[in-house]
Image (cartoon, rainbow, N blue to C red):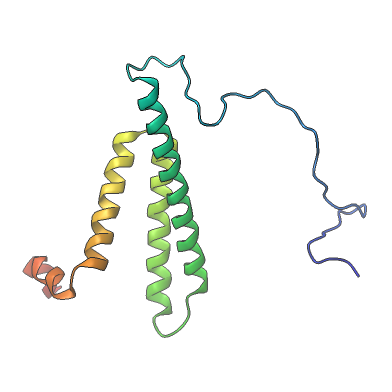
Length: 140
């Protein structure tokens, strides 16, 4: 009996990893490139790199959790939650793109917007949010 994970090709073979591959290392993990014309000390660049790597990893994890929730939601509020999780997933994708593009201003702006929305959605009483909205929004 075959394992479900094995998916034979048309010729009957299964996918196998390629061992002992070698490629030139572009930059060792945990180091910074000295060829960039930056006026920052190496320790500062190392710290910034570590923080950006952590931010990227956290953002990718959130993106994946939102997509997982998007597909696993059930119940009477299915449609609303499905759309909400999809929206949050798209926001995380934007953040990831900004971080990967090394656009610190855009990444900082998106992160700040997301943090403000998250903080207001989860840490303030519902009545506080309603009082802060303009009257025309409450009526519509």
